[in-house]
Length: 115
Length: 109
Image 1 (cartoon, each protein chain N blue to C red):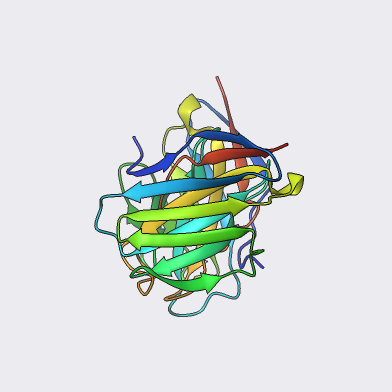
Image 2 (image 1 turned 60 degrees about the horizontal axis):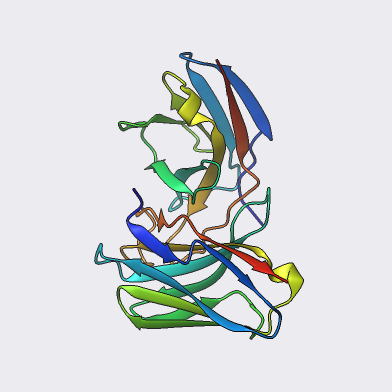
């Protein structure tokens, strides 16, 4: 069982819809991450939060809007997405961004389909 | 760009050891070597990490070359549940985790 919980597991939305992806962890981790993974490709980093503040944005289009309301929760707000945004969206957490010897714990992702 | 190179795919017979290689010739002194695997329809799963010395845990062993320019993940006895994509990653403080293409491992019954 994964310690990072992502909801929903599947989401189908139209290009004009607004939806949100949710990620939750209760391991006391202070770093949280969003990744995007296309089929048969490796995960690509989108955003990094450290102590609830955005520390890295990998030039992600503004139709993706991350939010970290508290240390256990990470949201990804979606608006006016394009068909090419269909992918698996993965959330991960680690104790702190600063330490390179700490692993990341991943959720099983939300599979997003844009109609 | 990913700082590691791995074979695209490998095959192993069930119950035999598997050695998954990774080259990282540009590794710096503070880079940790991390391994993750991703089973079908799941998120990546941490396997093991190391800096200079060989490491063992309940899942696998990590053998690191003396010059640290390569490493090998060792699964001592492959099972069908080990069929996955295995990613070798270098990690420095504050650095972004960049996944390369990884090695797709098939386990033959």
